[in-house]
Image (cartoon, rainbow, N blue to C red; front, side):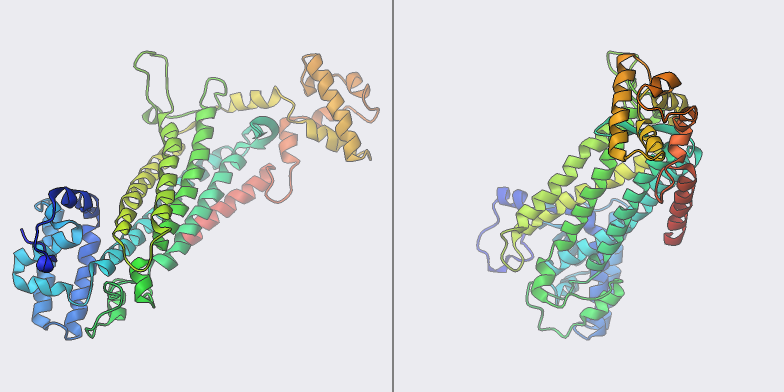
Length: 460
């Protein structure tokens, strides 16, 4: 079969070259966007008189028939036609005859493929914002139920200070909020039209680029045709934002894995999000968060891969840029799957409040509050810190926790200790005392929770 571009060639393409350079196996996912862009382009061609109005209508009808056939699974794409653009053009010519060949007037595959990816990412970014909001809703639901649930807060994965479990969960709410903001902000670079830039230099036909941008819902057009066809910054930005989001998902997944272990037993994930062992019948493995954690590296790899592809390319389009799609498409699929799983997994998670409480009582995470107690009695903080260090050492040597020490034992280290030290050391008091804005005090957490709800409602 002759190539649609093969007029100047005297030999057929080597079959190995054909298979190696074809992108139809993956860019067929852009079929809907390709037809959407073509419909806008041909309408503009008809309006501008570049082709006859009746020809434009005939082409539009043909494109809509092909779209319907693709949706119903009637179309078989061919490697011989390389990519989704040439496949659809060939299908169009087969459907309506030679007039279908007029569709490509005033454009190139270079601006066509860029347009497809702008349209595709715009749709997917809006989808990810929606999915992130579902994750945030699940976090809010769990946080509302556990404002007064106390667990150890950690630094260096060592118990540091007790915190509200709601406070801990809401930290992830704000991470995901920043991810949403990055996605939304990126739309300023995504929602711009390269269509009409041609191969690299524009076109001799009297086209109207702003009309196609309007038809496609773009905010404007690239002012430079070379930049329009060679820019992949918008994909890099998407992959970068996706990488940051996956890092946040991975951090949360790591905590879910740790918290659900026998050593912690802080939470239990629903059976629907766990698997068993082929040999050990007692096992309940947190496979979903483990896989979410692992897939982070996959997304990072796509970002580094595309950066490497683009780093040495001269203007304008080069075949190297075909490598922009697989990583982008795979990242979209990875993110979509991750977010669809994360929301219901968090929503159905069971929290073991007693285990958390036990962990808080069986450590020295309230030590800072003893230091603050002495500071409030006029002892310089550094001196108070040294005193409490000696108290901790004594307690460890005697296999006791701070609430187990008698008042006489405390007074060995400072005469300023009074009976009220036991109230100060209670986990509820330790948490409630941290009243600074954004702190873990229960009232502050409630304020934060209301703020989180307001943020979601305002941006819905």
